[in-house]
Amino acid sequence: MIQEITYSELTTLDKSTYILVDTRNPGSLKYGMIPDAISITPETFESDIERAASQLDKTKRIVLYCTKGQVSLGYAEALSNMGFDAASLTGGYNSYLKFLMDQQKDEDELALKEQTANIEKSIRKKFHKTLFSPFAKACKHYELIKEGDHICVCISGGKDSMLMAKLFQEIQHHKKVNFDLTFLVMDPGYSAINRQLIESNARLLGIPVVFYESDIFDAVDTVENSPCYLCARMRRGHLYSKAKELGCNKIALGHHYDDVIETILMGMLYGAQVQTMMPKLHSTNFEGMELIRPLYLIRQDDIIAWQKYNGLHFLQCACHFTETCDSCADDGTSASKRLETRKLIAELKKTNPYVESNIFRSVENVNLATVIAYKQDGVKHHFLDDYDNI
Image 1 (cartoon, helix red, strand yellow):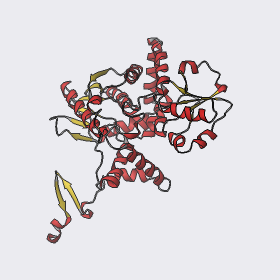
Image 2 (cartoon, helix red, strand yellow):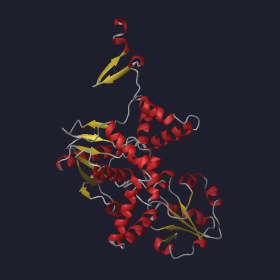
Image 3 (tube, rainbow, N blue to C red):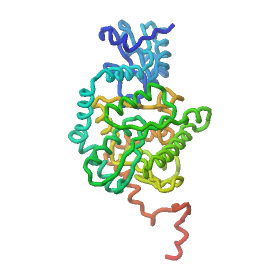
Image 4 (spheres, rainbow, N blue to C red):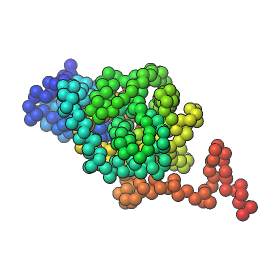
């Protein structure tokens, strides 16, 4: 029987006697790791267990963890069969998050308010140039906030939407435009720990969230083809509906600059089309409603830097179909294709440091005179339509 160890038990051990191994994918690591852990990817364990083992010390106990404590059990068994004293962390990375949340519960209100104040100060000072300035620029440049707006800030529990909520609070303090905010968390069927993590972070960040219960996870549970796409569509519809019910005229989503350029390139590579993720859109199904993306000019690395600086831990993936978010993305696209596109951009950047900004600006500099065909309002226009009339 494979050994398991709880995080509480782990904290009582001498750190020199064990090696803590994070077996999650590289994308998950951006959301945080347990302190002192080393990373060995699931690809390494599954394709070359000998190489994974070569990175470990047989004289020490090997404690492995994944997200929920399920996948790491298999890796622990494989190492045990190779003569290692291996164990899996019960509950995985989530158990570490629960440990932190339980500690936060014991903190008094004064200490909590001090943490909140420090987080807000970091936005005003250290990260003003990289976070608040591009947020304010996007709001002004794309006219995302107007007098009298009531904006529904849609919070998924991840780093992007949580930061977006704080930036909205900050810009509202400037009082240049009068508008109202509602911070909406739609619970599509979160596990208890995911729900607790969102509640805990909202309390820490000083965000007065409103929860809205739905059964979307159950509704798509039996869908075999493209459940992620259906889930994303259903969540968007539920958010529009609830926001309108709450008197809002706009919903705000946390897509950032990197999402935009990846979407542009994915459209060309996989969709044979030139299109972008727009900074704002009129809803076609909910009259009078708009979707806005105020993080449009903010880089993902800067969001991660803010998260790490403040020691924050956010929800990566609430989906109960997979161990991690590798098989889906929050807009319903294939995360494998998005990851492939992200790697391609990173590779191109090695020889062209301007590749990201060039991709972003390409959809602002479209010359219709050099385009074979384009669509507008559902109607296709071809260059030959007027070619002989010139």
